[in-house]
Image 1 (cartoon, helix red, strand yellow):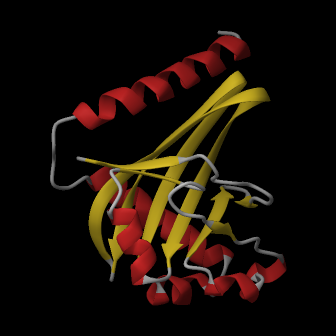
Image 2 (cartoon, rainbow, N blue to C red; image 1 turned 90 degrees about the horizontal axis):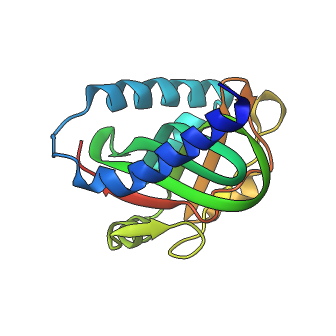
Length: 184
């Protein structure tokens, strides 16, 4: 299968999932998502030693272990994860986005979003579909050598980290991503 066909297939599948997933039957627990969230948090703590303290201070943490982004002129991304508060899963969520413009390729990444205040978390819960940049801004924290990062942004109500299997990725955005609750 050609690269173009593969990318178009992934984009089409991601867009179809955005429509079909809200219709999926409800389940109270998803062992697959739980295991992936645990593994992602472990990797996150390995990338930045202060990450564990940040998660403890946060009102809640939203973890998307694998957000797949594909594009060939038209792009899309999709991933599923869990919202946790005090180490307990509060619900399962999906993130999805679509884009148009110059883009070619396929990429997977992990996303950790920390709601540092209860007010920010309440605002997130009050929306049926929460869109980054519209319903709330997420400050992306760039992590440098030895897991250090700029502490000036840690006072922001919502902060996020984006990384993949090769380490933290820089200058990325979550702008335009829509996050919705799913029943798994």
